[in-house]
Image (cartoon, rainbow, N blue to C red):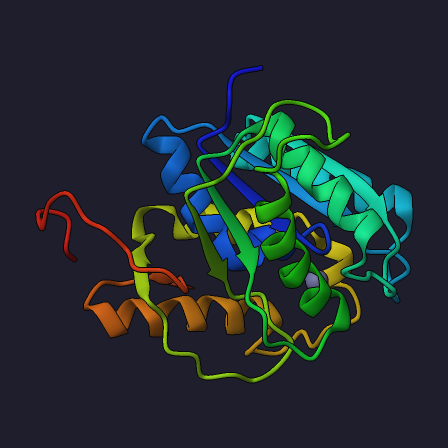
Length: 231
Ligand SMILES: [Zn+2]
């Protein structure tokens, strides 16, 4: 399989959609190849089951139009940035060969999210090693962009905000696929959880003078080839 342009690595099915759903839709509309690697099943949750989560994820994957989606089956709730998990993630990076990685932001209340962020950092480096028993040839994604699917009420300072206005409605439809996570057992009076998520996209859009946006942080510098696309 030829390398992916973008690989979003997520602790749980739904985190890629929460933090980068609009971005995925934008990238697909621009002709990029995009994959999502979920690290765990995300179960147990109060209203989910493994079967429910699988069918919700399949529905979201279809709406996103992903080129690839996989699940490493690492332990939910006790995800650890250990050597065994690092090798699994590095192996996936070598097989999928993404140009750019998207990872969860490193500061979070959920230990799985903190571990996932650290795992992606370490696995990116391991993926380029020679003389290992990892599968496939060495590969080093040129950037990691950190997305926000965060259980802390953070007010982050993003490196950039992507205008996802044309894709916001579809992102909301993608999120609604995860009924067991975002709708079941949640308040039904406005603002609902989905209202909150839309409002946050509106806030980041406001920050760059467009209707809706998704923020990202990059530890390394962002290079531009043109100023044409500044929002
Ligand atoms: Zn999560």
